[in-house]
Length: 197
Image 1 (cartoon, one colour):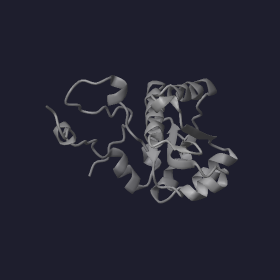
Image 2 (image 1 turned 90 degrees about the horizontal axis):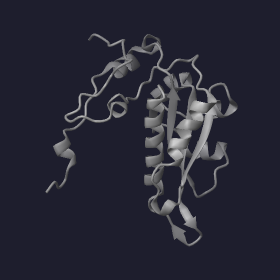
Image 3 (image 1 turned 120 degrees about the vertical axis):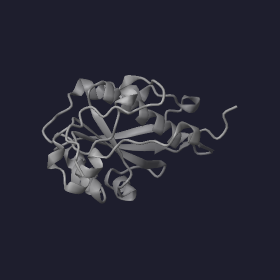
Image 4 (image 1 turned 90 degrees about the vertical axis):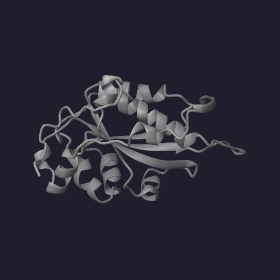
């Protein structure tokens, strides 16, 4: 198998035209371990998350932002599992995405995780626009993260986002290089539309 080493442009082959920033978005594992994200750009990325849609404007999304080299970054990285631990240490920033679940003592917010997902999606697209890349992680120890950062009982760790600049994929293990260069695929749109009258 020939590995693709030029992963700078991996634009999706879409069935219909979409915004370039959306078609260009992909989830690399090969981050530049020396790259830094400047504070203005990082603020812009989170400003996009702040303005994501939110049911009843409750805004349940919360974030733990950890820059590479910080104690917080090391604590997040320590909770990662499997392949994630092998590559995520090269990211410039690790972000723990947290949903605040109840609105108050007597009212739950059934849309909290959904709204957090929208905030992370906005963050992801803004990051792509800024020339950065993100990779969403599900392989982590959520209870360990919650304990490490003293999260409240109503704060649920939903995902972790790695953020940074593309690096040399040749530095990855052969298994990860294969994943990095695998063709980008999606199910056909017709398969996603349960009803389309």
